[in-house]
Amino acid sequence: MPAFSGRAPGKSILFGEHAVVYGRPALAVPVNQVQARVSVFADPLGPAGRILIDAPEIGLQSELSALPETNPLRLLVTACLVEMGIPRLPAVKIRINSSIPVAAGLGSGAAVSVAALRALSSFLGHPLADERVNDLAFQVEKAYHGTPSGIDNTVITYGRPLFFERGQPYELLRVARPFTLVIADSGISSPTSAAVGGLRARWQADPARYEAIFDQAGALARLARQVIEDGIPQQLGPLIDQNQALLCEMDVSCPELDNLVAAARAAGAWGAKLSGAGKGGNMIALAPPEGAVEIAEALRAAGAVRTIITKVETAG
Image (cartoon, rainbow, N blue to C red):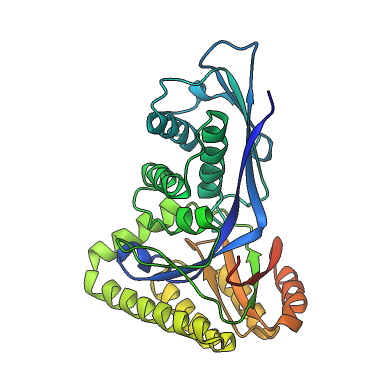
């Protein structure tokens, strides 16, 4: 029996990370230069119900049943079986390959969930529609991260630029003129749950202060949407810089990210900010198309462990 595979891209948040958890809008885009791929193979010699996991990039080889019940792989397999009304899988091997850095703000966990749900449902003969893939991936995100916004699983499932506001229908973003981003990985692991939980504690201690910051971040996201749809991406630069200042006020940046932001601006970026949970992970720089390579080189010289140049356009 042939393998059944599913794919999903990475993602980057342009505006509104953290504030989106508190009901403000955010903008996010897929990053197709990095991908998660999950393949499901029948294991005819294995006992029914045995699921072998092979994820070489993270050094994981295990039976699924040996993983903690809170492990996202166990959560998503369970969610898929419940969704399809199947008590257990036949014996299978699940291979996970991903070029998306882990805990770096590019949505690695959500991408694996989306790719795995696509592969498993196809293996079982009933490929899930994107809407159900998105809903189930969000269930896994909530179980694993606590209070995620839902933006990661949504932009990754649909593979399109999105304007997202929690509790509202997502809106595909019309990109009137493509623009270029340089994404740089600080090399510092940044688990989403830790950053989100730390900010929540600070918000609970001083809600008025943080609600005002979130309001400003939401206003920037709305302005940015208008700029993108008007086709004047260079004007995103000052908005990106303002968003970075707000993220620093939220205390989710760190010296390494601040250093990369400064290096990108010095190399000619129109704007630069952290992207994602913060306290490590990735930053993004809005680049003149002719200057993207130079900015990427400057970021590596400033300590970035890897860089990605990506173009944002309506087609993703």
